[in-house]
Length: 87
Image (cartoon, rainbow, N blue to C red; front, top):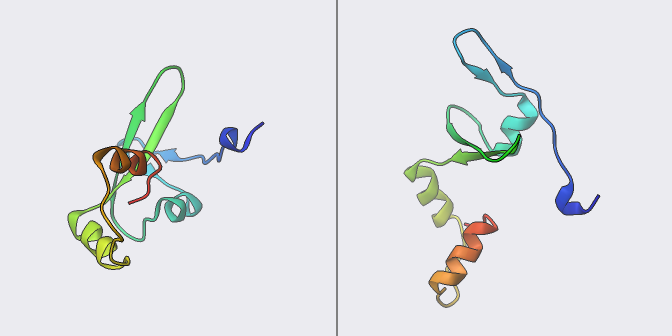
């Protein structure tokens, strides 16, 4: 199994009203410290992608906490960075 194939497995609980309880380890992995939103994308077979959605305030705070950019990026470089989840 290659490092790309490595999987983390988390079990979640869904109650009768459809609410999902995320284990603490998963909340920490996704960066949740309070309320938040996430997107679940279902692909072919049993493939599911989970992405934490950030508020605009969180994104601005994240951008402000980083060093000033060195140079500019092309649209292609931005797309590559997004694919690698480098914000």
